[in-house]
Amino acid sequence: MSAQPPALVWFREDFRLADNAALTDAAQSGAPLLCLVILDDASLPGAAARWWLDGAIRALDTQLQSRGGRLHVFHGPSREVLPRIVRQTGARSVFWNRRYDPNGRETDAAIKTELKEAGITVRSHAGALLHEPWAVRTQSGTPFQVFTAFWRSARDLGDPRPPLPEPSALTFADLPPACAHAGLTPDDYALRPAKPDWAQGLRDEWEPGEETAHDLLGTFLTENLATYAASRDFPARNTSSRLSPFLRFGHITPGQIWHATAEKAGTASQTDTAKFLAELGWREFAWSLLFTHDDLATRNLRPAFDAMPWRNDPEALKAWQQGRTGYPLVDAGMRQLWHTGWMHNRVRMVVASFLVKHLLIDWREGERWFADTLVDHDPASNATNWQWNAGTGVDAAPFFRVMNPILQSRKFDPDGSYIRRWVPELAPLPDSAIHAPWEAGEDTLRQAGVIPGETCPAPIVDHREARERALAAWRSLKP
Image 1 (tube, rainbow, N blue to C red):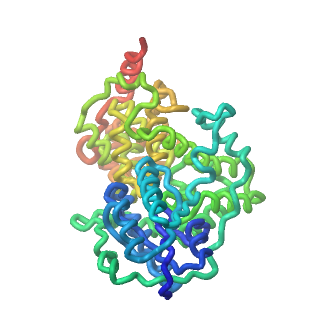
Image 2: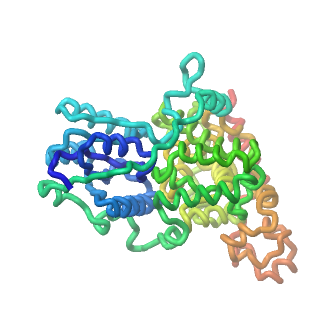
Image 3: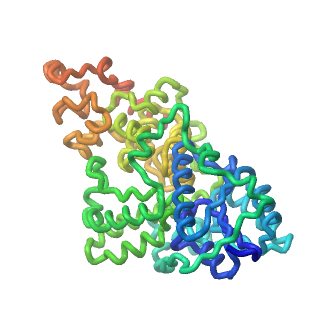
C-alpha cells in the first residue's frame, strides 16, 4: 500500500483483470490503484441481472484480494459519488472502460467534463465490443440497417486487437478514512433477493466470474464448436456457449472469444466458426442500433407499427410469463427462464413470436419481462431481438411469418427431452404426443395421467385462429 495519491479504476460492466484496457492503463501510470464500483439506482439492471451483478462484484473482489487489493463498493448517483471520492482520496487520475447505453454515455460525459475542469486526468477505453458502435458505417457514413452488410463491413476492418494480459504487477492504495465510512459490504448491497429468495435456480446454474467464463469458453471450443452450426438450434443438446451473461458483465471480452476461436480454426469447419462468430456480430449490430436509436426499447423503428392494434390481455400475459400457455415448447422456455435466468436462443424466438403474434400483445411487454428475468439482459440485444421478432425493427423478420410452436417443437425437440425437463407434468406422454397433448387420443392421455386443463395447462389460444387474427391486425396497417 502507498500514501501516494491513487489512480481510481471505476469498474462498471467489465469485471475482469485480463484484457481490461482501463486497468492496464491505470497500472502503467505508476500510481497505486483504488478499484471501485458505484451502485447507481439509475443504472442498475433488472432483478435477475442484479443477482449476477452481486456475484460479479464478489468474484472480482476475491481476485483483487488475492493480489493485495480490494474492490470498494459505493452507493448513490455516480455524478455525485465519483467526484466526491476523487476529492476525498486526492486522486489525480480516473480510468474506466466506455459504456454505450444512453444513460451510461450521458453520465460518463458529464463526469468527464466536471473532472477535467477540476484538473483531473480522465482516460476512457474501448473494451466491451470488437469495434466501437460508430466505427462500422456505410460508404456514405450512415449506420447500417441490414445485419449481413454490417457484419461484412465489420469483418473488412480486420481482426480485433490481441487481448491484453492481466497486468503483471498491481499496487493498491488504502481507502482514506474520509470516504471509508461510505463503503459497502456484500451484505449491504441488497442486490440479492431476500424474501422471497427466488434465486436458488440461478445459484444452481451459474457461477459469475472471469475464471468460469474462460472455462466455459474452453469447453465450448473443445467440445461443441465443431458441431455448432448443426446443433445450435436444439435446446436439449446444451451445445450453446452460454457465455452471454459473462459477456454482459465483462468477465470475458468479445476480443478474447474471437482470438480463442481463431486458434481453434483448424478443429472446426469454416461454417461452424463463422456461425459462432456471427453471434458476436449480431451483438455488435445491436449496439450500433442502440447507439443510433436511444429509444430502441420503447419505439417501433418502423413507424407503421405505431398503429398496430395490440391487445390488452393481462391474463394472457401472465400465463405467458408463468409458462402456462398450454403450448409445451413455449411453457418450457418460460419456465427455464424463470428458474435459471436464461433461455436457449431458438426458444427465445419461439416464445417471443408467441407473445407478439399468437397473443397479439405489444412486444414491449416482452422486452420488459426479459429485462427483469434474464441474467444476460443486454439493453441493445434484448431490444433489437424483440423488434426483430415483432417485425418492427430494421432487418426484422416479416410480421406475416408466424412461428408455429408445435412444428418448432417437433423439429428442434423431437424426442421431447427439453419439454420433459421443464414441463415435467407432460413427461409421461410419448414423444408423438408431447408437442401437442390436446391432439392426443383419450387412451394416450389416460395412460399418461395427463388431462389438459387439469394436470397441465390447456392451450390459451388456437394456433390457426391466432395466426389469422395476427395477420388481420397486420393487414390493417396497410393504407
